[in-house]
Image (cartoon, rainbow, N blue to C red):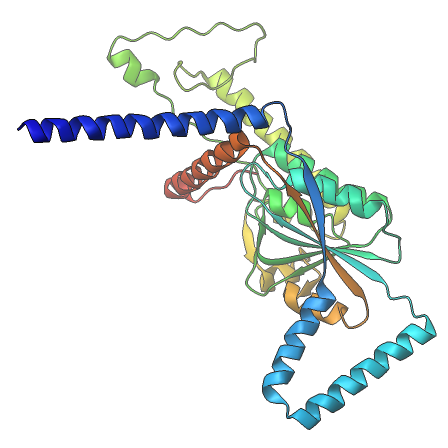
Length: 339
């Protein structure tokens, strides 16, 4: 028994030492990152090189040595002729936006847009590969404003949708001068939704009172804990209708050919049906479009990489977990989306 007691004492001391070391390391990391805002950098990759590497890898596996030699010789000759002729290819700047409920990718998008607008000319092009099912009104409003900067600068904007651009996602997509969607991509959902539980009757049943004091008649309309009134519901619905009208006006401004009252019902359509309703201009995938553009233009993929602090990385992990939980919860309720 004495042996086990000594052994347990040893384990306790070891565990205490390990915990102390971890605490010291974490404190040092926090101190090192304290006051330092995550600095980032713009990463630029030439997509032409990526497509060229794919072709070379396939040629090495398929062609004979003699065929490979002829192909490489022809390629070098063509490049030499282009260089001698001084041919200036148009430039295509490629961006990605993978949207969550809070449109968190806007933080990087704003820097990417600022960078490309410092160099891009009207003869160039911006291609946005967009994927989003929508989210918070103000967040997607800001994301859309970033894309509007490209249109205002006179640089052509093409939006490619492979999977989904609905609600706030379509609000972003409609800014493109050309929208290309995969045949079974999900588009539309031009509507607004808000929902919340009300626990007033449950609290009342257990004799629990909730007090809320406001200054301003409509500072609060619907609440989670208080007793909601018809007047509050009417005002809440009125606010939703106001946002919806702004949403419709925004889409109509950039897609004037749309029968906005017919398609702004909150419905969604697959790419094939969306083309018939003029929600998109062409059917195709982003891979197809970019591979074709790479034949005649130089493609540059822009990605702003933010170096996050320890606290920010921990917060991001918690935020992602919360977003996934929220999406699962909402889909179980009624398959509804935010704007």
